[in-house]
Length: 299
Image (cartoon, rainbow, N blue to C red; front, side):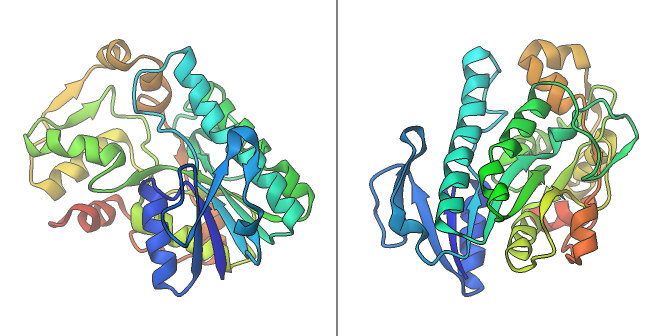
């Protein structure tokens, strides 16, 4: 296949491009800087500009654009950046994909579409949207793909969980603390931590490219949900470190504000119904297997 990837320089994008090329696919990357390689094309989503040559003969476009939600404390300007970095590129790509007749658009979204106030209730792709900033962001982000879907483009919405990687994301931040024996649960520990290994995130995106029975929202989560307390114990076991500490909820709220409330102290108990129905074979079906594969060691 010929696959065009936007957001190829991030954690997931870098791994995805490498995996697609290993599998023999032709990959074109959309970049917002001057091009440095033959596989790159420049684009400027703010000005709705995309070099039309980039999509010639493309079988699919994968859009992974979006600023990190946990990079710094949220304020009004940063929340607007989180929205603009997702919705604007998605709207531009959906229109271009529809006009060019590209068969498939695979677009990033987030599992916090469901909000965090679900308690122990299991959520699937058919569950309604939740409330809060992140939930509304995901709703609007997915809605920005409408031009492609309305044109008959197979549109896959990746409702991704926390992606486990040694040198990036949440695990990259936690690793030094656990290494020093400073790991512990966050708040009550009863809240769910939706997770997926980087291998399965990339594997499931690749699977979606070649399996037309996947369409619409897809929960990109591991099949065995865990609470924060269970995640903490599993990470401690894999790293052979104690996890004696507990960070009170009020301290997290004071330290990082609204992000703590929406993404750390609450989380949906999501399961990957669409992936399992489509026959995707998870490489790391449990949190222990995922952490062991990511960090080495044993569970």
